[in-house]
Image (tube, rainbow, N blue to C red):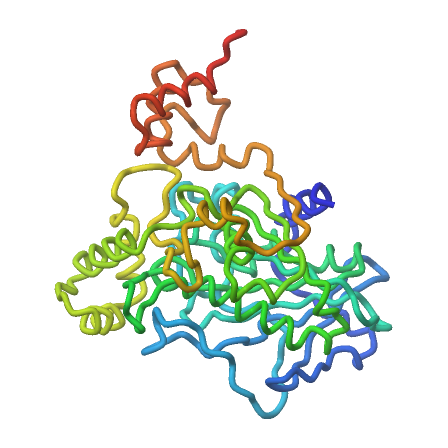
Length: 406
């Protein structure tokens, strides 16, 4: 199953960006009444004779703009009339990779929709009519180091998985970077983990609404890759998230990865540094958050990576925080004590995924040719990869990755 999922997600970026409407099908399955209001989807072809019904860009939270920036999400209020769920939503604000202009290997991960703080939407793909009931549901949580990613990327098009496996596929947008993970412990205005709670609110929406689409809320598998996999792990650990899903798949990420979370003290240090970098030189938390809310999104994005305590290719500026609530204790402590959801898990990794990061700081690597690095480049690359390690730790990494036969 994991292999088919990985092949599915590694090949779909070749598909075109437009969303054709297969108007030849019946219209009855395009309309669904959710708890918040009525939505109309769109038929999307998967072959000459088959289609799925997609509901793209359904709002599940109030827009986190203005005073809601940095706060935990609020459920979407009811609307009147018909909501047209026929186009992918905005991408959440994020750093855009401009390192290799025109290079598909990096461009494919950049947002392909307009960026906005109004970005808390989800997508649902349902197999073709006649609509079945009690279908298995899979909810995708994208990765991107908690600083990038979007549910609308071509590689995450859920129609083919929904069609081939006769399941319902859901993907959820969540806030990233400072917008999703800036944390001032003890402050209700910026408590941290907003991005994780965006995901949880999306999962709760699935519990409350997926049966209207023919899905079984008792058969929900959440799955993600990299930071998405770490997020899946956090939901396995977080008591408030455990009731919102059934099973889990983690690809190339776990919650106790050293890059996946920080302490409240480190989260505060990074928040204060970002504030100083954008000219919010105040000590009071309320005034500091008000000042940060007055800044344009690009002002915050341009300074995000400067808050890191050391240069590394495997560290990200704003990530989940051990807040005592969403995460009651450190991930490692919770795993060691058995404090997590007891359920079926599938864990694995995507081959060669880590090589993506080597172009962003590891010496001797190039996107244009086979990189045969020197021993000196290798040793320097180890230091860049694990900058926090002492001499013993560095030596252990070097020994592990040394080819003793060649």
